[in-house]
Amino acid sequence: MKGKTHLVCWLLLAACVGIGPAEAAEHAPSADAATTVVKLYRDYAWEAVIDEPGADGQDLFSQPASVLGRYFSPSLIALILRDRDCQQRTHELCRLDYAPLWDSQDPGATELKISQTKDPAKVAVDFTYPGDSEHMHIVYVLERTHDGWRITDIQGKSAGLRKVLQEPMP
Image (cartoon, rainbow, N blue to C red):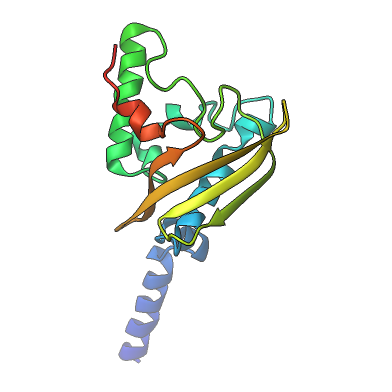
């Protein structure tokens, strides 16, 4: 009887301290790079389709480093935070003066499509900009980390995000 009691206690303990399937999926490394980019747009596309701020009222690039770490590599996070520090210090825009997810000053998209390219470290995002029906093509460059795929650059029609953020600060 004592053995059965211990077994039941261990099973109950395991059930109590274990995480559920939804939490496990959220924290598991993504299988491919496109999964990270899809999650990014699911979490932050509200700025293009809803005329109110998201749940916490902050756009992606205003988020704390812990949130940025869900999507971006540590080196890109450091550059984003460097730009944010410059903005706080100067009270002006520094290098990040556009919305990288939309490769535009103003967020907006219709017919958005996210697709894995032949290169496993690159993901294409294509959409139509609603203002002038311009076709937009953005390439996300990612690297595999122990936490899964993380974005190291966002390349649009102009210089990539990494290059923009590496420019000297005012």
